[in-house]
Length: 359
Image (cartoon, rainbow, N blue to C red; front, top):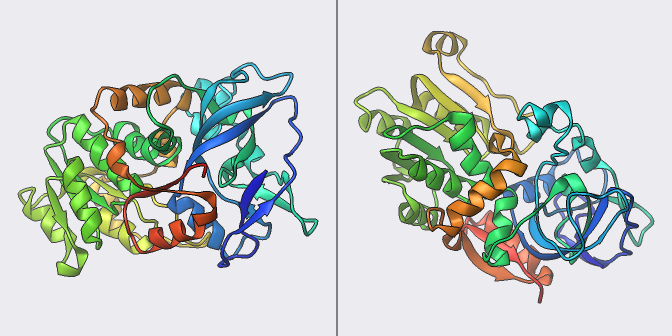
């Protein structure tokens, strides 16, 4: 199998020919047909605290080529959607509708891929979909039956599911609510679409990229704002009779923008923190008295709180009925050999999603 390997933090990915891992009793071998390049991939590649080589990629779909003897959820030939978080469906977390904390989560960090230099590589989120094949625990894939093309379907594996879930589950946006979204890449655009689907009346998209602001208008933003032009907090208050928005979402992973989201939300409003911090030791400084007195709900949003066994089919139906526009999020299709170009375009905020497809 071919895979893109991040050997050291901050270095380009190297395309390697690797032996396909053995398929264990609960493993599934998947031929990858599409994999989106997500900010989580890039952040994980560059994290200085990383010690093991890494094969990025977790936002993917494919076809099951082989399954272990104990696998019950999928079968050879099934079209499957990979998930950023596993869901076994039977542990305490899963049966209590918190499958994004499934007890099989630690399996994601086990090195499984042998490298030419003798080391073992970790697969990001237990997937490692920047490859033509991936071996995953069955809890990380869900069978899907849909006519959606692979490049669109793959986005449900992380970015779209995280964004929609943050709206529907973490924040609980209601018809007529006001929303602000800081960061309008793939996940941010999914938040915007989720807010539109939920019936929000005011949707503010904040991003320095003109292209992403324009894209946000196309999928539901009622107002866009370049942070270079002023303070987004003032705009939020101007549009809400001085109160602030009902729901603020931070989708970049920077503590100063998380604090900005806090200030954009009204008293008793919600602040959903979605973006992955760029370093493991990042600290979020919050004004303690304002946190106490305002009653604002500040919540981290892991995969948007989505329950993949329940929500993948729901989100698919939204796309199939035209309420969720996935096509607008696919900016370009690239091959595995072009993966470093795709990462460069993400760094430049050029487009929403580059999707790796077979050459």
